[in-house]
Amino acid sequence: MKRSKRLATVIDLAKRKVDEAALALAFVQRKLGEEESKLGQLEQYLTEYRATIQSEGRKGFSVQEFRRYNDFSENVAKAITQQGAQVNTVKRQIEQVRRHWQMLDARHKGVLKLQDKALAEEYKAQERLEQKELDELAGRWRLRHPRL
Image 1 (cartoon, rainbow, N blue to C red):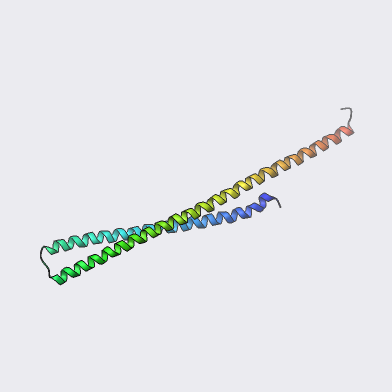
Image 2: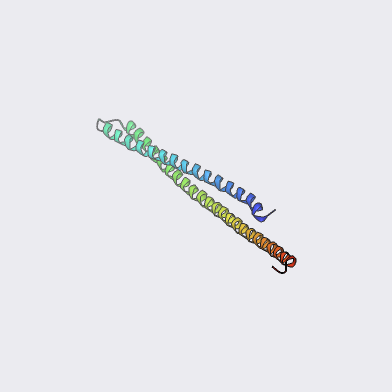
């Protein structure tokens, strides 16, 4: 079996790995979008909640109500901080998955170049063989027809 044919299996495997890594990258990117959306919703909710507290605070409320509003507001702020950390974690995951995909893609392209080189060598070897056969055929023809 020719080298270029043997490399075809390696190329298929490398291509599959690149495709799998691309799917993983797409998955993590979707996850980042979801996490950023959650963060945005929390921030918007906190802004609206604080605006509500301010407008209701003008009417006046008890210390217990104020503490309850304030504690809830702090809890939402903590959730925002945690969600921001989650977003940053997913961003780091994206970079790791992207670097992995790029490495696999470079490896796949390298194997493709290796196959191209093998095909070129096989083509040259085939041409040399054909030229040798033509030279031998021409030599035999000259031996049979020395006067022509």
